[in-house]
Image 1 (cartoon, rainbow, N blue to C red):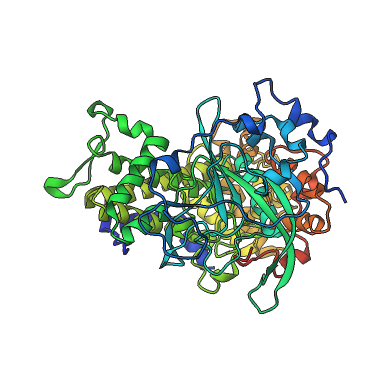
Image 2: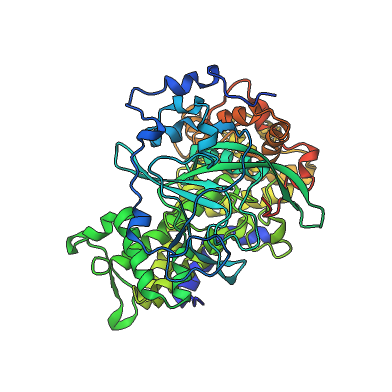
Length: 590
């Protein structure tokens, strides 16, 4: 399962993070009807109850499954899944939070959230009519090392629902019990990590970043033992289950596992399934689509994507991944565990574990204690790591003889080009510039790293700068940024003033009014992000039975670019307690 980057791809690796490398130098537990009024009156579309959902379980129907039905941990061969039913013990489960917009995706009537049996159904204690639950088989590279079979160790897919637009949505219960892939674990999840996954899934969607979604979060009423810091001090925590929703939960590792076992026909079968259901446009390519490219490597230098749907697919996966990671860099999101089993082939953010948004700007920030001290998955490394993961994905397709070396290298090259194009476009918009200015942006990020400036609040404040350099004397230029440039001495003030003068000069040449530019900048620079300390405040309240803060935080994060008067406390810098273990940095324990 080794991947070798071609010279051209290696160039891409270097160019992808060129702009980043320098940085390394330097008691309300019940659901009230009032709370759901907006849900009920939100849409005039025909809505269904849970018994009316249209199930179309293509994954189980079209792909080979495990012939065994027991839950004994084992190697599952020649199969894409194992049939398994939710088995988590529950006792008076309660609905913590729900997403109106996800119920809309499913054409599910929001009144369903008020059903007394709703928590029982979405804790897995009561079966959903039409569902065909299973756990997926996959492998993956973890922290750069091939880990073999992994699979859904505590996530159980209920099946796929088709909505009125014939969109396919997979419903999955995370923390619903053991599967053959649970290894030595219990298949359960705790409220702490489940709140984080639920909230971040929806927050990322509202930020405009491709992501898996979350329909609801329920408590199980049971306790789960976890050693949060892996220090030999386990404790009992409230158990919970998140219903995750995605068009597919297929990962790079879904294909890698079969290639590693030389089950190459199954790699092809799974690739065909994926293209048929999730990339159908690639089966209809013709010569007139003009998607042939020269790689400049002799007689076999032309890559014709119209003649090989697998090559076209590899390129699209690479480009979707590049677009995804550029959007992460734009909002300061650090995934924390970019193993190949946590990489979606649809280009979605998937598997929210020890994630974190940048507070004080630190390119080497990692929210994952397991990632110390190497910081493989730190913020600045994400573009390179995702290319590394793409390299292993295309190697899998090459091993299965679905693509040749030229096609594999071209997919990696496209990743580098796509990332740089999108990253530069995002940073240009964040600064409100008429065109990309590498020197100006690089100097800004260096200044932010030196002074540990809050990433989100700085860019939000930057829209208050006026383009006319004559409006303020030089010693007052920094006033609009006073709230974000904290505790800096004269030398640093001079450095910031120098940068700001260059920035204003660029703005003055744009021909855009200050008001228009502010609107544009505020539309790409969020005021509210899901900071870890905000999650922790909601977790602390929920663990004693008060779910209102979870719901309020979801409401705020649904409109991250709006000012939301009265909600300013959710945009504040982290308090001192936010840097204690288990808040700013977390382990994978959940």
